[in-house]
Length: 246
Ligand SMILES: NC(=O)c1ccc[n+]([C@@H]2O[C@H](COP(=O)([O-])OP(=O)(O)OC[C@H]3O[C@@H](n4cnc5c(N)ncnc54)[C@H](OP(=O)(O)O)[C@@H]3O)[C@@H](O)[C@H]2O)c1
Image (cartoon, rainbow, N blue to C red; front, side, top):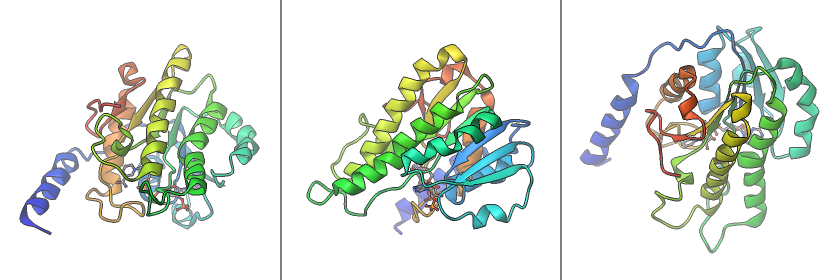
């Protein structure tokens, strides 16, 4: 790694790491998707002691089993099977979540340029990254719901996009952003705050070259959640709470 790149990485890590602190989110009922790895797993780790959580996982839950904590209920659900989301409707309705964190996503195939992006991969990625988030939001609406947090990506910003390629991932995140904005209007009358957040450049399965530890990223997002700030409704935010351009 070149000197400038290495310095940029250090500065980036410093900018967010020095904000790392214990969160004050307590006694909430929270749903987290994509919770067996990366950012989703870090949400569970930082929330499990003082909150009741449903962790939605794809097939594997081995990382969640290690918590061995009664505050956590694990549900296996392949979010690409949209019709199956209805099967957990009763469980979610009885749980009455205060906060839904739509974190699950896939990147799609490695090759996503104009010549080789594949339509089946596109549809599958769209289902997981967008439609599943909407369907879960729909069944999570209840009189105790306070916030829906959609884990988006700066790569979904049309304003900041300055290159081609990555048709699938970028389009699904741009669509998730639109879903966020739409829900912010529809759920405002129910006093629900809906926002999208870019978690930063985080070292996970999805981004092996990432800079931030998932817990550092999540700690910053929890700061935003615990604000319960109505002004965040309908916003697309970076980790430090600044508004990103759609
Ligand atoms: N890491 C970054 O730098 C970065 C940057 C911008 C945005 N993000 C966003 O952050 C979120 C979390 O990603 P991550 O970086 O933590 O990567 P990750 O570890 O790969 O997490 C993605 C999670 O989604 C789950 N998932 C994938 N397909 C699923 C399906 N069909 N049904 C149910 N769950 C499914 C995965 O479970 P399985 O692995 O078991 O399938 C995994 O736990 C994503 O929305 C991602 O787009 C990450």
